[in-house]
Length: 191
Image 1: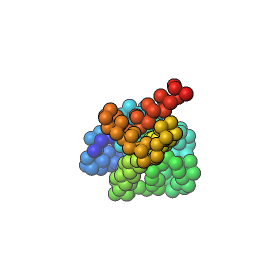
Image 2 (image 1 turned 120 degrees about the vertical axis):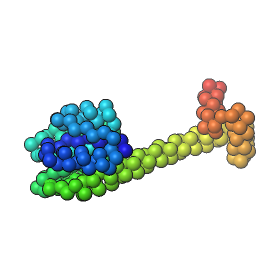
Image 3 (image 1 turned 30 degrees about the vertical axis):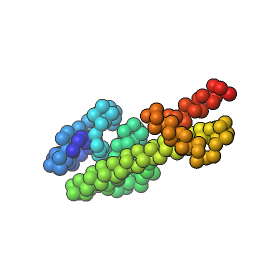
Image 4 (image 1 turned 180 degrees about the horizontal axis):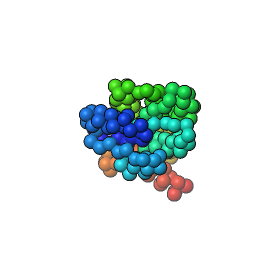
């Protein structure tokens, strides 16, 4: 596994968590001393997960968590006093993967780390799928528009225009999207 970044002020919990994560195969565990250092370390080292101890007096933590999520889509596990869990839920809903109430059992924390990383990976795959689907839809629109221009200009049926575009794309060894872009560019220059 990769790296984990921890911002835990409870020394006993920090030692224990470092050991458990090392045992679970994390190659590097970074434990900065302040929220600002946490952000800088995470941005430079790109860890797989962040485990952060929340304290209401530390107002910087919520903004750091938001920045970590925005910049890295980093799964964040927040550890809070049971009386603070609701507060973390309020501001952390869009950024925090898991909230654990103190006292935290090590096995719960290790399970939360594993589940948060798996969920973040699923989110990344879904983002890639959405991007791919958006590109496909956009390509389809451009191809349809170019096909319409060929139908109009050359008085072709829809099937004939599509076959012509396929043949031209294959002959030139370019994608249908590239051909459609070229057709539309030619039409705009000529028109």
